[in-house]
Structure formats: structure tokens, C-alpha cells
Length: 286
Image 1: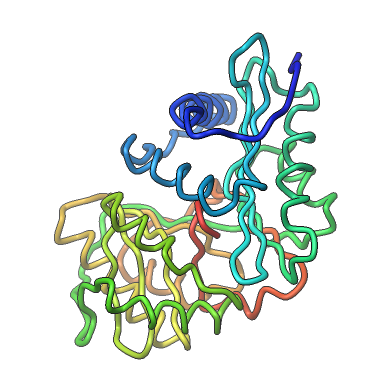
Image 2: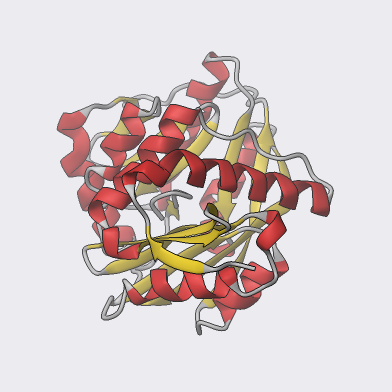
């Protein structure tokens, strides 16, 4: 039984990451699928520290016997609230800790014009998010080694000078920019790819972390460039959060000979989140 809840602190970061690894590993075992490899420890810690620094009011932990038994991170970007993380140690689950942590992270978004949660396939999580009054958008994932893809003309690696483009695109597709969140992803090893004046993608370890553009053609072009980047590195690709709104992405994945599967979970949205397409969101930064 969880004994207390308190705001997250800097020194909690390593232990929160360990709880997260145990929780998602346990979910994969219970549901009988292969767990997705976690990001490098340094990148995972940077993500936690980033949200803690920008949104201390949305960062909470649950304690049991002096140890961290769960954590929640809620963030707000330009009026858009998102749940960056909600995990409970397997030994403390189904006792109300997740509900209490979610309530605290959600309160950080009081007054936000829009809400986004990317849910795992855990039925308890999806039930909790649906009860917030959010709309559920079931998702596919696409995995495999990209075949027959080449970098489209115009797609190139980006840098800090391209952040204004990402901000314009983000505001068009979801109403709020990621801003320096993308720099944190780059510092953690992710690669920014851009199609100037059209769109961008973030790629890390074969996973497409974000992909967005002003229009479907631009998004498809950037996604092909991202899969070509993965292929050139010899990595296994994973394209995530393929909801029914992202038909443009499904075609690109099939053309690259990736396989679709239904183990991804759901995107939950509520309020004003823009068209949310063409857009593949980030698990950490929504």
C-alpha cells in the first residue's frame, strides 16, 4: 500500500526511471509481447529532468516504505496539457496509486485548452483516461527493416537553426510548439530531419519519435526520409501512434515493407488540440 504522495525532486530521477522500466517490462510480459527496448539511461534521465524543470507542478511521486512506488509527469506547452508519464511499480498496482498520481498530474493542466495522453495497452490505464472524458483513437505501430527507401530530395539533417520551423509546424498540427523539448531529444541522441518550409521528424535508435508537416505530402516525404535514415544505419524501424487520422503514414510504412501490428495503445485527446494530423506524436512530449 502506498503511504504518501509528494512532488518529485531532482534526486528521484534514477529511481523513477527504474520504476518505469519495471512497470513497462511487467506489462509486456503480462500481455505476451516483446518489450520495446528502452532509450539509453542518459536520455531517459534527461527527459525526466526536462519535464521536472519545466513543469514541477505536474511532477509527482508515490512512496511506499521509503521507496518510490510510482510517478506521474504532466506538462503544459502553450496551453496544451499532456501526460508525459504515469507508472506504478508492479508490486503496488491496482491499489489506487495510479488514480491518485493521475489526478495530481491532471490538476497541473487546469485551464488548458487541450489535453493529450498516449496510452499503453494496459486496460486499467485506458479506462482511467477514457473516464477523464477524452476521446480514444486506437493506434497501430509499424515495425521492421525499411526496404527500398531513399532519402527524398530536400530532406536533410537539421539543427538548432531549424527549431522555428518545427514550432510553426507544431502550432499548425496540434496548436502548440515543442520548443526546447526537441533540443533535449537531440542532446539525448535523437536526429532532427527537416524538409525546409514543409515539415520535420525526430529519429532515435530506429524509432520515429515525432513526425509532422503542414500537409500530408510533406509529412509523407519527411517520413520516407526518416525511414531512409534508419535503413542507412542498419537499424530496425518502429513507427508509432498510427491512428486513423494518419493514413498518409500507413501507406509510407507499407511501401517500406514494414509490418503493422495492433500492440501500440491509444491516443486520447480532448478540447482544442488542432487537427492532430499529419502528426505522429512523441511519447515523452506528446
